[in-house]
Image (cartoon, rainbow, N blue to C red):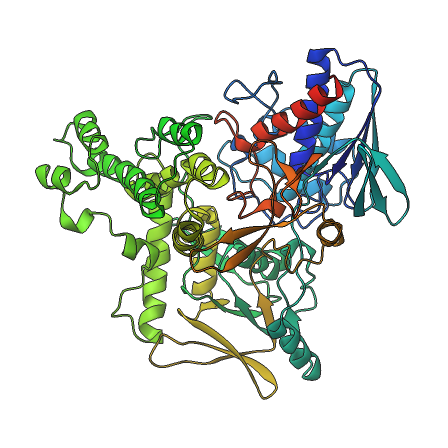
Length: 622
């Protein structure tokens, strides 16, 4: 049997491991050839071990794994192994020394100083994946073999009960496919084409929406003025590339405040977005591996019952249940911190027994109005009385200082950080509601795509607190200016011009470099990925579409897959057997498909790896 793994990032490495252990457990004796395709090799595009070392992960090293454990609800047997942190502080250093990585000394210094509260470099996670691959290969049964092709699969064609994979170099006949294609790149839209033309005509630099690790900004001069549009995680990456990587240093003064010392090689940076504020800092993780808050409103039992009974709920109820669970975590932490006379267990129980609002319970316990949750303020923290640049500049410094302080108080201590941690923990059940289509298409658009997703990104997908602290230090050093909400970027004469449309004085900032500081959104409608284009053209795949009450159809940009088996679906609704597609290419068919696997929490990525491997092995053994 021949099995193709298209993409050599974390998902298919987990699928490989699961195939090996399914085979060992089921005593599968058939000759099995596993063909892995990825032009970037093991680790794939995002986790290239030789990328710039300043680029960091967004999860703690102690909360990242590729191994299954007892928490995973799966049919296969778990195979235990070290987390990224455990590996880094034990066998990792020897593995690094035995290989010739580009930033060898930096990597060895990193593992020497890594703690369970550290955010590792992305390069280090890539190396962990390479070790994991070698680890799995050593445990393969004798009937298994692996072939790695650093090539791009451009097309797949059905051939009776098999498939033919086509690269630039050759064609390969296989029986099953697991495809996890990772970050994509879209065709430029009209605005990007126009900006690129303007930049070329006026000798300016324009960086379109791209993955930052693959963008060269070394030609940006210290005298340049850089405009970054977007304040999400890509903005953080570009900021590190333009400052820390150029020799600037962050140090703490006697009062413990982080300060930035210029190298003289960094440019001046102006940045903003529609909201005008960076994503909230992640709270200091005080939880043990596998520790979670109880879920009361969007509970496992509730969501599983909906799935089993194929029962739909309204989008409003779905959103309400998320918000109630988040608020409960906030209020329990608040009572622990500020209301010592209230019995926490009784208070928590009364909140959990509430049906649609906590007002009666909060009134009963005299919780101050000023300390009660205000979702509108959480989503848009800039007060209405902040009307000009001077006021905004003062506000944003105070805001960032407060955000850092709250984050450093911890996600089991600070009420806000506890609430945001609860929001992250609800992801598994939010995913189930989306995957099993438990709300209508209209409600999915209104409540999830338009309301919840932007708010969730701002509140719960932010960088580690040290990144926000660095941002504040750069503002104080005069390197970075956050210009205000409602960012506008225009082409004026021979330069780029930007300003805040929501501040009364409309202060303008000129730049000769414009960087789109956001990641490309996976979109099969506009992708440059040749494989996806050909799958659609060959009718082996279709775009997941939402059919709305007004008679219109919204093509989400996701490839459609079956709910239970993750197999591709054709335009006429047929299943493409043994052709599994998972990860970012299915974003919007599934929900929040990026991120690394987490140990001890029944991680969906590990569950899917086992499910896919199990289907392949059981089908082959029929």
